[in-house]
Length: 212
Image (cartoon, rainbow, N blue to C red; front, side, top):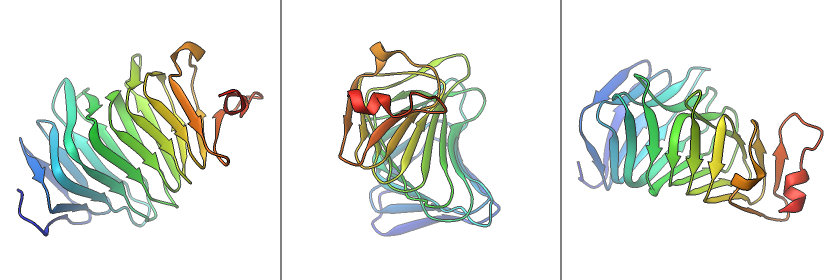
């Protein structure tokens, strides 16, 4: 749909499954607490917005359920809004999640984390402005970032095997390397005066931030 000022609500305790669909400009999709918005053939945004709205400790999920590589494509915004309960962006059926360059995902939740899992390739902008954003790939594979991953007042944690040819920006908070990584695969690192990089749970914590 491309109708302006149209709202699609996935109520609490529900699952809505979409087929091959494009969420157009002006369409705002709100996903309630303990609810899942699923898509069976990837998902394309054409200026649309998806709001994840967790509540009461329950998980709110955006899940791409097709088999194989699933693409979150086009251009648009996905936000995890403040509420008590984690949110998840992931795949089902063993799929791998690719995020296109026009997609921005923002973690705005000061209380609970946003977890993005089964990553393959990120070309978009993944930003934490509050709370914790965690990124992880499919077990036994290496995920890659050629876009922007930014910690701007919120923390970002990178897990699994990963490499970066894009930008890791610790603008005003911390990006933590929670798994093994190669210094040769760090790509571009940038940080502001209050930003830093950590090697999580190791004595050399923050050393990377001082050297970049």
